Image (tube, rainbow, N blue to C red; front, side, top):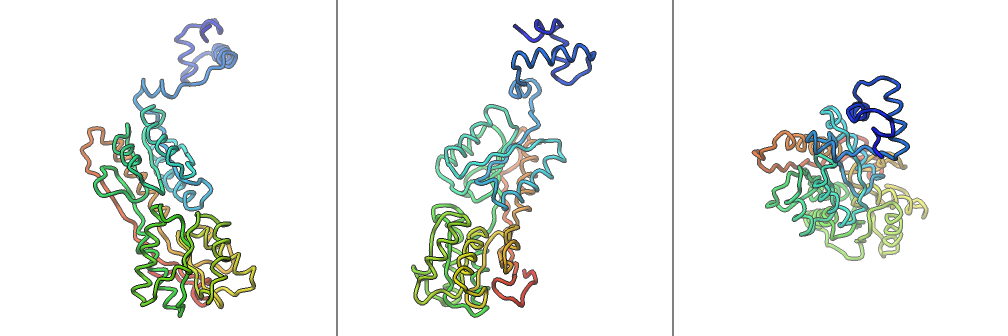
Length: 335
């Protein structure tokens, strides 16, 4: 039985009510009651096929609870909402198949475009992104030949800035708590760490490096492992603020002073950087600006149906925010 038959009204009346157009109150009530009784769910795909656009965009990220992605969401939504779009959020847990499925879902036309922030880029990612059925912008690094718009953070330079800062404060055994080396951020931050050590005349030491998953608990476990090294490090550089916050918890649990005994620096300059004590020195990778820029690139694509725009890649420069975890006398923002 159709909604029109159930409600005892015309198909045109049903269409008007379900699309939010004018109708008599009793007619609208009968249509909505009949729709509920029949389990009707509005079909966004059908509407998009009829109207051409869903006015919805998707942002897919690794972990919706990570403050970095929260900052991106706010920035993206500020741009897309002003342009009349709703923003759908999807947390992938960095599972490649989930990320690929999100890209391929553009073919279902439930969303007009996608911003995605994968931490690994495989051949399958490149193929899916290149052949996506709708506009896509990547927040992250892609091979130069991939014809997809992207917004990058210069993690190599950011990591080097942090290590040079720790060296400048007199630290000479600078340990590194990194994420998985097969991820884009893990790989790039390792490159920056090694380059800065060489620049400062310090040798790379395997016992001063721990690779783990990005997270607070893993940061604690990594720091505990490094503290057992002899001689122990006098500084910890952590590949993100979550790792750094966990590492600081381990140091404080052992009665060590920060930065008196061991200095700690992180990356991202997320809200976590000022959540602990002492406040955390961190490299600002401009998460909000990357989100804002990605949103604008996506809107530009949506307004370019003929594909005349060239592929665009932008890189946000990092900057160091010095706080008490590396130098208690420093609270200023440095370039």
